[in-house]
Image 1: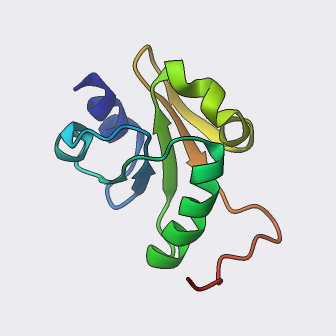
Image 2: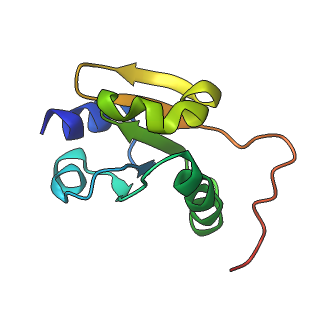
Length: 105
């Protein structure tokens, strides 16, 4: 529940949170739209393109437990750190210059 509370406290209403956890608990307690099951940087890359198409103009965040930081080293190095607690690392994900977010499935 602390993970979800960290997400709620560090992100604005209406934002989209990408997360590796499969549990529905963060959805309920964070009161945010949570895209679950993002395993690592490679999976995040594909999901970001999709999320930007489906949620244009919405701020995107990555929220991970600290023990999974090594799986998201690229995202953590490129994103803007928003919060870091013993339970959660949250970064704002920004569009990289030149990134094409208009591709269709």
